[in-house]
Length: 182
Image (cartoon, rainbow, N blue to C red; front, side, top):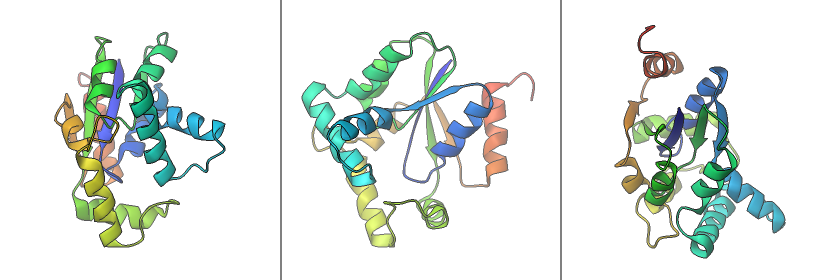
């Protein structure tokens, strides 16, 4: 089974990836393709450059390029989780595999803001207004090369509400991965 993850900043996608890796999934990310691109250009890897690099790659090679690269590079992998799916075209490219399912991880804006403040990642906004502005800019794409989190989320096969703690999230994942054993 292949799972793809989409969701807003600090919704818990990395926690889902980590749990799946602990349960024998191989992890990759659409952002990995962008990171490799940025490295070849000698650019710093930060949130702004990742967003710009993704737009650049999509504009040059089509809106599904990041997912196509990962799909084609991982054909022999049976249990894969792909993080950072941000466009409907990426979902469509991955759905060429019959075992692909898109998971949207949701959490309220207030919960995500609190998590973001706690984790202290480089590039994360340090004030509420910047957080909201960044989020709003990622929701609807201005063109085919931009991020479209709302349209991507609408394509989800599975929605996980993650307003609780890590233990609650892990219990939901257990039901998803091993429903007969829970």
